[in-house]
Amino acid sequence: MFSKVGKVIFDNEVVAKTSDFNMGLEIEQHRVDEQGYLSQEPYPATIGDGAKNPWLTKDFLEAMSESVTPAAATALDALHYLYRINNSLRSALAPGELLWPLSMPPKLPADKSTIQLAKTTPEKDAYLKEWAKRRNFSSGTPCGVHINLSLNPRVVDIVYNNLRGQFANRMQAQTYLYTIIAQGFVRYRWFLTYLFGASPVAEENFFEKNQGPTKPVRSLRQSHYGFGTHFSGDYSSVQAYVDRIEQGAKEGKLISDYEFHGSVRFKGGSSLKKMPAEGVDYIELRMLDLDPSSSVGVRSDTLRFVRLLASYFVMTPALKPADVNEVVARADKMNEEVSLEEPEAVSKYQVLARAFMKRLEIFANKLQLGPEYQEVLQDLEDRIENPSTTPSARLLKHLKDGSLVPYALERAQRYQDAALQSLKVFAGFDSEQILSATELSQQLFEPDAKATLAKTK
Image (cartoon, rainbow, N blue to C red; front, side, top):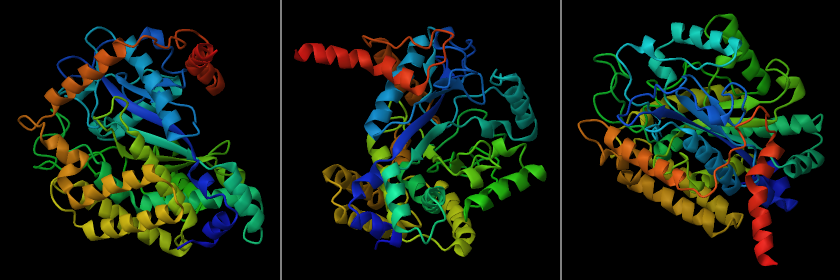
């Protein structure tokens, strides 16, 4: 079952380190009013400059907020960061403002030219205006969960030191590991869409008349109706990935290399062009819908499962480079089909999903990853066998006249009320100072640590 890399990791007893990915989270959410329309309120003044604050910022629209965490050692730590940062945003909202908990946007005006694009830097302002001019405006409005994963350095060291004949230097070993992880996630994106898809319908004016599916689906956001320019990346190597994006920009298919928003993105180097020479530092996963059952849009079990998948891709046989593009093209087709299946229907790919889940269970048991992983896998296995337990199917129970607005507003209000009842709200963004990751961590958590220490004395 193990690849050559996996066997090295297993034999050197660093298996546990393969699930110790540093993890950073980025959560997009729209500010809305109590009727379920995009908020007309200005950007909250007490959370810093949305163009400069790296932890609370704006995305495509002025009302589209993004909560960003520093890299954390565990999924739980990342969620704790996210919870406090997100609560800071909620506490800064104007009276009557809420955070929309769904991936598909709230009700949009019929005249989308009245929607205000995000006010950021002059360079990004120009980019957003050009994007809105060239693309379907609605496709810029869906929100999601982005997960940044970086390898434990100990794993890279072990692989490089034991397979020096395969890699010219440590950087090449690290880039190779990120490449096979990226290939794995792109290959099984359809699987994640089935398990976590949570965008069955679109609200008022997202689609033009007579466009869009006629029935609820698993994930509009992950289908061709959702976010993005639908420009396919090349994941056969980092060099091929860079060449493909640069060629797309040169041909005008992309406004710039910044516009590539594939389901997985390589990150690293001082620029995209230099990434093959300077190496990949981490990967960004962009294939998860917001989970409206969580105030922060994602659950700890979901993050734990993502880490398990990443470990599996590191330690099991990878695709041959010559096969990657063909496999990814087939996977993209599968993802489109799964995205547009009816939420309560048995998936066309149920047999494949069942087989892959079984392989993951064997992997987890072989590595003795513990009951927390077994519980996650058992719960997700139930989703494969019983489609009615998937997030998108559960949302169908809350549909009223084809809309999720009443449900979304009820959830949004519940989360807002809970945030406003918090005894301590972080106010460190209300200054000109730009906090580093270390400074943010200290200000968010050190007071709690000191208080706990004082109680134990």
